[in-house]
Length: 221
Image 1 (tube, one colour):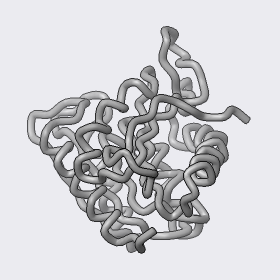
Image 2: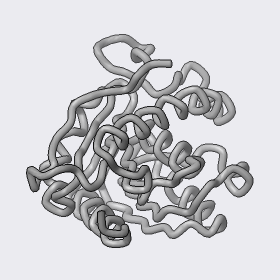
Image 3: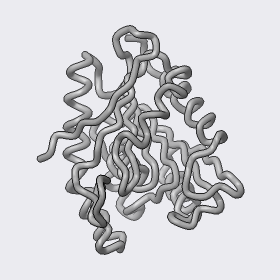
Image 4: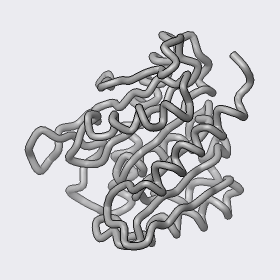
């Protein structure tokens, strides 16, 4: 099993970490693609260590990029099989980093973009120790039909999506919002008009607030 790692930043407070935020990139990118979010969000959660792990597999289409699971077959069932492979790797990363920081695994927050959002939602909702929050940008909730049977907790979820996204259509997040609400998961959604497959100022602000709210609910360290 591959050991995940990647660029890291913080805490902004320059003290010991009190939370860990994992930033899961999209297909064809790597951890360097999202670590630049850390200085912005670090102002909202100054005691957080941000880690942007590189996905475990080389991007099948070539280049320098990585992928969390293969897209050779884009049927939901096949993508879920890929997520079942990567989930133990992500869980091992969380366990390792929390042990190194001396933190309980309840003080982890997951953020993902595109394929990383799919990974964060699938794995985060099924972790035996749920994350403090899940932020899913431009993603899809895979295997919603198995969620009620497999879900281990109901962490708050932020869904952010551009309404002009032609890579992962906004319908993916709208369907996720319905499924999560039906499962009793607290959900906040931000849909940005005219935004394509990316993150805009509205999404950055919503993400900072979601992280800040999640930290506020945690017991003091």
